[in-house]
Image (tube, rainbow, N blue to C red):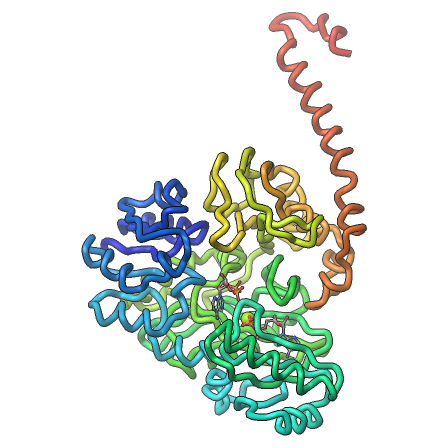
Length: 489
Ligand code: ADP
Ligand code: ADP
Ligand code: MG
């Protein structure tokens, strides 16, 4: 391909364009009226406004995106994550228009887009699954039977669910009926599909997922795991690779299972197979995300593989350039999602202008963002400002670097989740590796947040003092003679 259209915005649009350009491919940006001055628009070789700010009048207009791609001579469309990335009908339309969809075929998106269809597809491959139903629950009676069989608590989940939404925990049998009714109506309004199913609620799980890459010729490899147990409301907030609890054997088994899942749906491209892992390191298949994942950079840091580049090459029909035995884990990486949300105010969205925006820099620090100083955080989209990624030889080094990077990240004008990141990275449960998906619920509160960020003022003052004295020396040190030193004491 010589030119592609990136059907997304923000950090991910920019990140995709960077890899494409590196490969000598021209990039077309699309943007809504709210993103006219966004970095992804300025970075692109060509940019087209596709409509007003709301997503359903801009970034979700599949036909329009295809029209723009065709009119500018783009040969492929990269959907990024969110928006149309997991829309099977869109990927079909892209193909029907004679363009290349940089992602899996509609068949795989369709199957894996529904958690029940996904379970059904992998059933014959001997992949462990959370105990529960493998078909939609039709009535309360059925729900009660299942709950009794697997034991309470159970989780009612929307088959079409995503983004941590559409889940209800049931602790008592008498709550089952009411919770099920709610789950069905929520699923109907959020996903346009009211089917729900039941899983045993795993009490103390880790969320560990496997990155896979599959080419169009049937070759599939995995790129190890990402630990995503630090979640708020079932949504990931801090991710890392590798996981500190997996043994080489379990890692290999999970990797093998993920490869089988990809084969089960004839997968093509980059995808993620999510698992829950219990305290005995038993793992259970949760779902597959048929797209590039938000937290893909940690995998890139420890494997040295550019996942977007591989997506593009696979879409062009190339063979995978490596076999499983060529891939190795080197070092450790962390990612903090930096949101325009106020951790001191129950993570309330914080809208406004980035009056100060200075990224941390240095070895082992990567910032994937889509903003510049002076820009507004639009209210129409996901409030993520950036992903702060750090790398180190060891887990400790990566954590240490994250703390330094948080300290050096200067954002004013909106509240951010940086202080929350500091809280996590300093917490004993996190640094020791002894945590599960309940970390935030269990340890996070306003007092603890204030406590972990209290010394900030002290350290800032200390740093200012050091810089002040250093600068003063630099400015006043005379060229000749050392006698003037006394003036600086
Ligand atoms: P991850 O962060 O691991 O990539 P998420 O589940 O957090 O996966 O989703 C990433 C992006 O995709 C978010 O913008 C989220 O809102 C969006 N998303 C995920 N699933 C759906 C869905 N079923 N419908 C709409 N958006 C979704
Ligand atoms: P989504 O499509 O919203 O990402 P997932 O099935 O991937 O839904 O689950 C999201 C999160 O919800 C998991 O990472 C985990 O924290 C929690 N979760 C899901 N299923 C279970 C379960 N059976 N037991 C305990 N926690 C679960
Ligand atoms: Mg998930």
